[in-house]
Length: 224
Image (cartoon, rainbow, N blue to C red; front, side, top):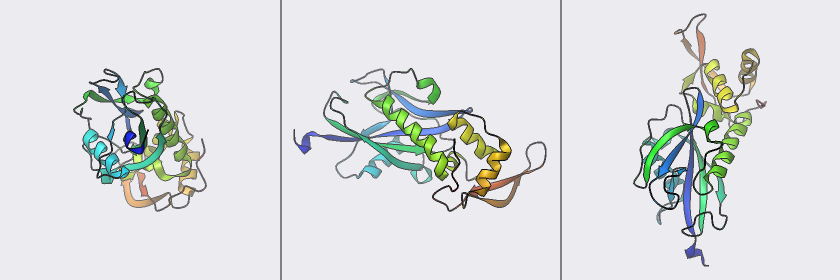
């Protein structure tokens, strides 16, 4: 086998919060191999594309969103022999996070595309090695909430502490003490910053509105 015999693709684990659940974008394949199986959105890397460009193209094709507004990062590479029965294929996997993603649209090799709750996919049979890829990317997201500002990528530009806490609770699958969480996130250097806005739409005192700060690392970390 030569280098020209190895195909390179990108697969995207797209995560968002909908209906109080962490959801991933899955497509149902309309072609072989794995016709009828659920799979992650993905595609081959074009001859004139670098990996990030290919990931951005796939994301645009599957979600129709402005990729400049998406948190997109490379997660891992998968290359086990036989992972794709058509050819020896390396998959470079990306994690994409954005709030309020639109309804997905199926591509040319897809029967459908939909948002599915991650917790409902534990027993699902996915095409190729996509179950492993999905599991490891979700765990990457859960871990990054501890030490990076990733949680804010699930929120709109402006958010309340309660909305940010809800992100942690949904992604981690556990309830958090409101007062303790408030102390931790406001005490983390540069994680979030207060605006001059308030949210007066609910009962009780108006809630302060925050936005993402400049920190690249959350310190002290917010541990599970």
